[in-house]
Length: 108
Length: 118
Image 1 (cartoon, rainbow over the protein chains, first blue to last red):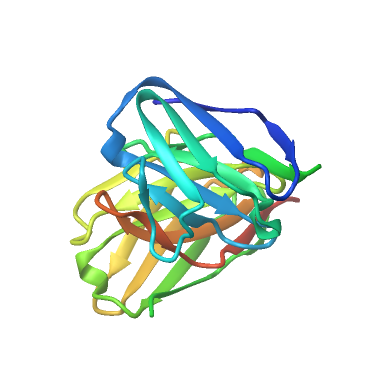
Image 2 (tube, helix red, strand yellow):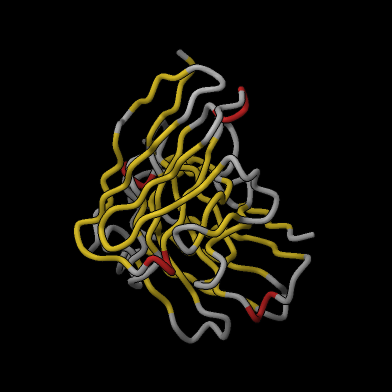
């Protein structure tokens, strides 16, 4: 099973700042099958990025993804108030899909 | 518009069984791989199971293998998860999701809550 480790666990930033979230895989993952999700309290996860760097439909361009192999990054260029949430990375390369444990992005 | 509506959750005793359903609409159901994902209270996301479009191929997380069975009825546009020998650690909100290897998993239901407790 591929283990995904996200860092930091919690990120405290202010609106307008830049956020950088990391996800490290225990073994190499095809960048074609790597995604990021946002989840707000009481809501289902929302797909932000797939294929490591492609934005899903309707996702603002302040969200961007990058990375390959074992290291992947989600960047939010300028935080809006609605961006404060929990973010999960996911690999769907192997048949045993896995998620990271999440990074909570909170308002400073 | 894609819609996924889960049902069948509830309170069940340890060792008991429950069958979840996910009614799908707004897309050609038989053409898509479907997934179950769960989230324990206050915890992260855990993939549970996958079923390919024909229903002939399935995959399971080690934590549920041998206890849970995923299936689908393409004539009814419905996905199922039969859960047997339930344990306390199976307590979670269960989501169904639709996606593909090309696009990730963009469509999720709102979830159905399963509580395993005596």
